[in-house]
Picture 1 (cartoon, rainbow, N blue to C red):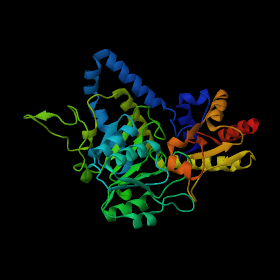
Picture 2 (picture 1 turned 180 degrees about the horizontal axis):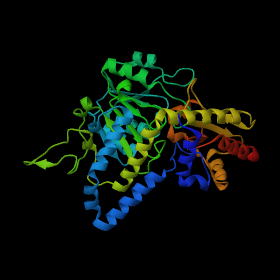
Picture 3 (picture 1 turned 60 degrees about the horizontal axis):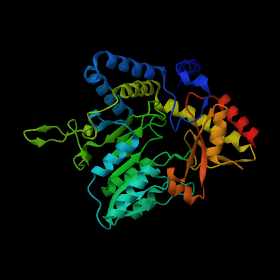
Picture 4 (picture 1 turned 30 degrees about the vertical axis):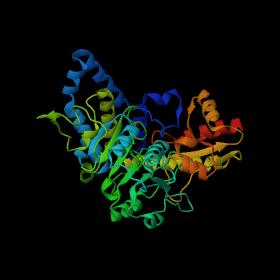
Length: 394
């Protein structure tokens, strides 16, 4: 566990905490001082010796990042690629898969993130394939038993957004993995809200691809992401494009790398990657399970407190364990306008519209939701400050 003294020190090492109340960790968390220092130090090095030369000098640190990221998810370092965003990683892996054929099926969870879904739908429309939604349990979570009944030879892949962006639901990603492994069907996981918030074990998940942006619960900088590709799945993937790093030409023939770095490019924001390295190391040191238990407890307290406000409607799904995301609306207020009004008080939350999780939002008749997302950096006083601000707007 993390002691109160440790938490106080972690808060002191987070410069942004004294600038306002940050409750948008599911959007982008606050950088720790160690990440800021790593970024600044490398930019200084680039200014002194040149960006290309500086990158060569820190190659071992970037490899250490891949190794730490692998430890974080129980993978090997050659299964990790450093990307600029979760979207670029997931999109690159999907585009590298064998082409969809007419009649093929893509099966997705109801909470599939809109960016993933848009790629699937566009590819399916072009090929004459279909994108189908896996049935949900009564609590909104993915129904793995129903998925098993959907499996046939036409299923091209199964895709699951593990922790949705529009509420506290935690899908049973392991149960889905058991179904896909038994059927021999590729399994892609969007772990954008999971990494840094819940323990991730790709061996238990039995997934073939998993991605996460670095800027959320890992507390890395924007412009960074991690992509995992299972080693046994890699040779089934032909990248849509390559460069001199991912497929160097030797003896008049371009040779694809034999690791996940076939999805990396020679051009990268090295300073940002070193910032991510510091954040990943912090998560490993503190223990993700410890961090997630704090944010989940704060979110639970927030749900209880907001439920006492008559004008508030809560929109979290799931029974039992929930994540650190709290979805709600305030009667008479558009979610985006509410977000902006709170920002004027230096209370920073998120707000999502239908495009973020279109299947789920439409199924529940929601046009938008306000979203408070907690980190281990937050406190019960923060919960009360948010609640009082909302009561003052009623």
